[in-house]
Image 1 (cartoon, helix red, strand yellow):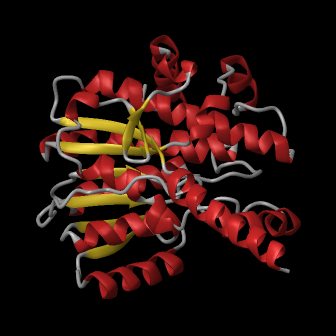
Image 2 (tube, one colour; image 1 turned 180 degrees about the vertical axis):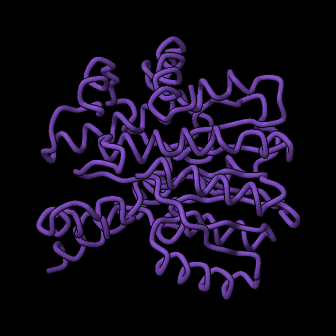
Length: 318
């Protein structure tokens, strides 16, 4: 029995060491206050987005919860106002799976909000389906919706500068590819809807996030707007809500044991939003609150420029 207890104790100690040193990651150390500043956080009714919005609200920012589900977002806004003591937390309707909704959101925001200091493109999906405009769901939501939103708000960001755009990508961008002929024929970067294809579509969309950030930095060089992409860590969120019940049940034990909670998962996002002195690293990629190197495809400027041009056409910006 004593041997068994020793093994169990050893396993617990090993888990704690691994969890806090590998999975848990860094912490945002910034003490910056944000009174008088305005932030948009997409997908902020739950998970990393909600944790990010709560931290920004506690620092005094006016926070716009840009979400699809009105009921959930208004409940989240109520929670954040109560926990932060900040009444300037509001919901605005945004469905990133609809380019019309993105345009409507931008029009409403620009008409009603005089400034924008932080745009946090946090929302992400993994699963089957098509957007309202016929694009694969992961590509359409994770990349195209945020691409259009950012471009529509760039003037306001520049007027409010210094300001930042923060794109929540993922380590899985390293497994991503971009097949432009396939995109032209299928309106997606994968050819099927199987579980494996859905995972590949997610990886591809995260590569798009990294490349978009890189080219956006090139476009914004010399302005008061900087941008960053990041890996938030492996976080227990509702990202996989489109998975089947049995798949989620299989993942649940590992998720509870190994994955970050949303508050820990928001730390690198907050670092990119708040840390002073990051301006020389515009366009770069962060993880665990530190600068990291992206995969080889994520450093391809020609690929980033082509993705930008194709995205402009697909969203009607050109």
